Length: 110
Length: 110
Figure 1: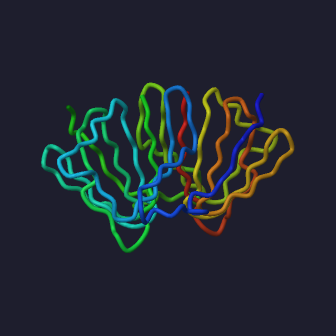
Figure 2: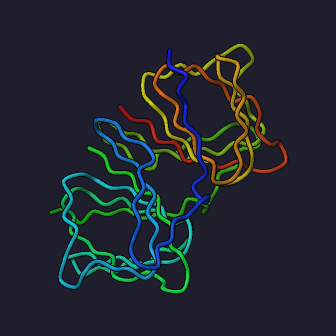
């Protein structure tokens, strides 16, 4: 039995993301990576796509964002919205609010 | 490439948990299970422990709860608190608020 539980608060001690997007690992296992992402206006560089080997489940906890898929679909994300993105489903972060922090919980998994 | 992304809102259409705790799957893969749990006053039956084969990462999104570990530790959870519970780390839900809904996001993974 292990008792090494580990506690934190997702809204606490948010890093300054005014200059760059900040990725912070929350938990890591062989098949899974959970991270907190703090964004403030950053987007995926024009013409680039995320094309990830792993599936991703992402939950927007604060702020607002917009994703764009290679299919042409555009998805607005507000607080509480979650989206499951299959592996190799090409997408990009098209817009995030410059005037407030956008906080994401992302889980990457095989 | 797959474009079968799947969107929802974690705070929407909360089921009635006044009679029983409600577990709803959000995403499932070989090594991972993500679920939404809605609780309203329910606790783990007295003398019983969760002793899970998988690690669990849980985030409390609404309400309040208290976990108890077999080690004797007691952990209060408020909005935004997350806790990583290793596989086979015996624990129980000791208390949840009867007067409001407690909303959890749980990720179980190998």
